[in-house]
Amino acid sequence: MPVTFTFGEMLSARSVIGTTLAELGETHDNLWVLTPDIGATLVEFRDKYPDRFLDVGLAEQVCVGIAAGLAYDGNIPVVSGMLPFLSMRALEQIRTDVCYPNLPVKIIGTHGGLVGNGGSTHYAVEDLALMSALTNMTVTSIGDPLMVGEILRQSMTMPGPIYIRLAVGKSDKVLYQPGEHDVRIGKGIIARDGTDATIFTHGTTVAQALQAAEDLAADGRSVRVVDMFTLKPIDEALIAQCADETHGRFVVLEDHLAYGGLATRIADVVADRGIRLNAFERLGIPQVYAGFGDDEELRDKHGYGLAATVAATRRVIAHPSWPTSH
Amino acid sequence: MRDDAVWLEGERPSVAELEDRAFELRSKLLHLCGTYEGAVHIGGDLSAADIFTALFHYGLRVDPHDISNPRRDRFLLSKGHAAVCMYIAMSMRGFFSYDGIVETYGKLDSAYGMHPCKVQLPGVEASTGSLGHGLPLAVGMALSARHRGEAHRVVCLLGDGETGEGSVWEAAMAARSNELGNLVAFVDRNRQLMTSHAEERVAFEPYPDKWRAFGWEVVETDGHDMAALVKAIDDLPASDSDRPTVVICETVKGKGVDFMERNLAWHAGSLGAADLERALAALEASRQKETV
Image (cartoon, rainbow over the protein chains, first blue to last red):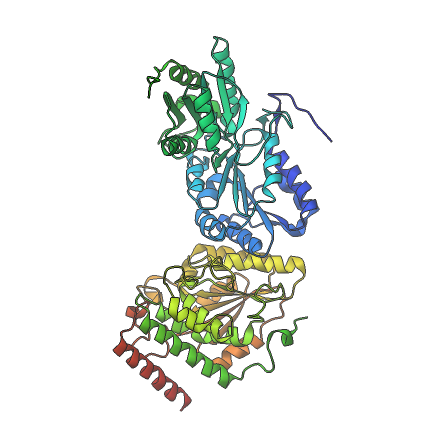
């Protein structure tokens, strides 16, 4: 049944995951869902397919190891949990048991970034750097709650592993109408078009970038926002295209360490391909353990909130251009 | 029902025949250790050689000509550094060419590396070597078998040293929680780590009680007594039972070569030509002693 949502309406990404997994469980009798004691929203799957649902309790390492064992035997396991623990406690299992043999295990979870007010034990801020380093791993970070369902559906035919990062997922702004964009793993989305500069972002800060672009439009600035929800493989062509079409002026905004995440991946593409930029700024978490506070307060405190995004975008637009002669 | 006849042509080998094969396996290991230029984990290979023989030549329902048969028993080598012992034991069962192992082991583009790689060598069940990873994989495979109503077993060989890894006990708890009686762990209890004798640094004892406390069936056996290993295999609970079993095999690291036995210097190493002769002579002497 087609459903429409209004931009800005709140929806739980977790509920989308729950519904999507229950739907996929019906069409894929080899789909398993595993969790280390997380997942009230997995109840629908658990109730429909109790013999393909496994809660191992608090044991991330064995959770991922079991998923790999299931995948060796031809199953498609989804591991759902909190990312600070899955990405670090089970990092070696993800790397050696899943990525090394290139098994179709999906790691999906919440608490990517300074979200949830749990403190630094409960913030995954290094996860995208860690996951992007792993050979065979596809790395995504999703902001729009409905997109999570689409990514899960697409991932069913992938031969190898995928990492799917969410913020808290309890209440997320709907960013796109279903069908509004051609959502494909590995391709960025131009969430808002513009010509003066591009803000690249992913996950929970896409909404913030769109707000910054809206604010800047009020004084005549035309800012493009790219939802680079796949960090790996990165959409190199779109980066080059944005350099061409937005005067080589880039801001990268992310709820992750400013070094090691999307900004680093874009900088790598810029350096490797010799893309000529006029200005590049990165906004993200500095090398600190961030402390407590709500999401917006923490972003403001650590220099990548809305005001900082607007200011950085103004700076890259105002930055002098390189001479155009070659 | 398990159908043994599918997996072994004719009669299963006798204990005496298995002992001969274990001797051949050790001889071949020593030859490789004497010809390969790099280090071979010979200590833990020799401690596990009888277990490998009992499994690949007697216990496991596997078919070298049909490595993807869904009904095969799954064997996971959690102590992945004993890979070469597994390769040779499997070659003697017809999986691989022994000459291929000897000629290419550890060399560029070889499928036979220090730790097994499923991608490069599909005849093995999983890529292992990082300690503490095998049993969680085995739990996943055992769950999969249960879900599909398949009667095969999942067998995992661990070293005792690696049971210091917490993930082993996470898996032990998960196996019991899910009543995986189709899962069997063999522990090569050689009582040595790489740099120390087991109890010097780590309090493993009371070792069988640790497994009992996790709800496993515990079988204790002499890991160098072929008749005892065969009996342990014969007596395993049916794969549809509800409790996983661990067979704790008391072994000697370096077993069969006197100057390697219980010698920390021989966790891994290589043999020169003279030492190879000495090692083969020691192995032969050890066999004479045991048959007397």
